[in-house]
Image 1: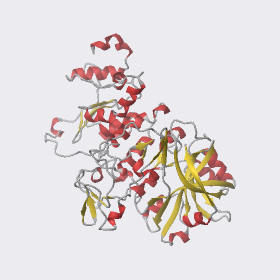
Image 2: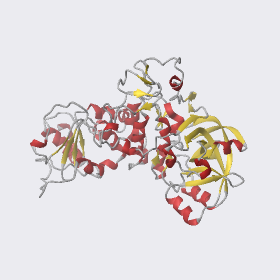
Image 3: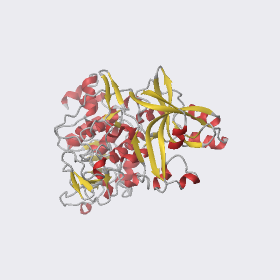
Image 4: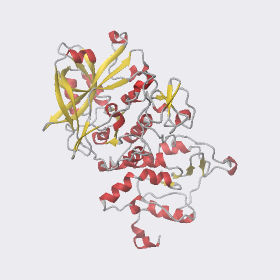
Length: 515
């Protein structure tokens, strides 16, 4: 603290108050990003930012300025440091309500604090609360309200439902990506760094790691993200901070990302009889109430092409191997991968003895070296095929509704027969497609299917017509709407085309390079 005396007046109030509070409680060490990370050393700064999850996870506790809109807001309620606060009555608002509506809970950088901190002290506008892995305390709680029992289990409330699984838990990553995409960033340049602590931590259990926020183990499914509305008024998506195929571009599009299609990658986990230490069995914000009812039901995605990351040393194949051992669930003679055991019709692994899986999956082994130096490849490529369809003009009122709400365009063949839907992520392109007949180039990236009786129907953009409701399994191609510049395609939307309609169409093979 003495070394800061010469610049004390230049420090934001929140930092001053945090330093004085730590001194008040007799602790000696305090990590403050602004002071502890060397800001003018890009290499050191990047390394520290990538490992913030471990800093929060290993800290004794985290100080959270929940009510502050900026670093100048300060902390409230510290005896002999900040002005006293007087209350005429006990506050009835709970800990989680205070967090949910706090400025802190809207910022992109704070998600990793929320997820990885083992203990946290929250400074709200008129109250201080404490949360750890087994309890929540309020400063206006009486001693008789506080438990004196030892911590025997995990308390999984709204802010601590995240379960750091030792295996690639795509459903948990869905929650993290969803939460992050709905937060705010003051600077768009922070879109990757503010999430880097999370992906760095999860790379230890996700084989292949992540590429601009997409898990490589389920890459074809991860590409199926979509925007929640008509997106940006920008007409071009090249030249940005992240590639057009990454959901992180939604920050630049001024839209939130929708990850419902990722449901097709959750089927490897058996949740029917799991009662372990998991947020899915608690009243947590990370539990199934954050997933729409029935949204897991019946949706399947299968690879159609092999993806490569274009790196300086050549093309690197993206593994995309989540279903590599799916045959083990069908053929009892199929050799199990190392460490996996069969338990009736299910499988389990010593890394998580209580969890059961419908089939084995790839894991990061202790012997494997996690590659944290892998290039962040801006361009990806595959060999695939493309076809052309049409949009037709919509009724003016319906077109305006789609422009403001979901950004969905109906697709037709040359005979004006309905074949599918497309969700467009740039408003200029969307409005053009809604207002006139236009020829549309679409590129296939994967094959999908869903049973007509499955509840997941309600979450598909295309509202099923009567003849499709009775057709059994609906099969389709997942397709991209792209625009080209200098031989590179840039994503402008994603959709589905009926499989039979696609295969009836005249198609053209191509090598797709996405930027």
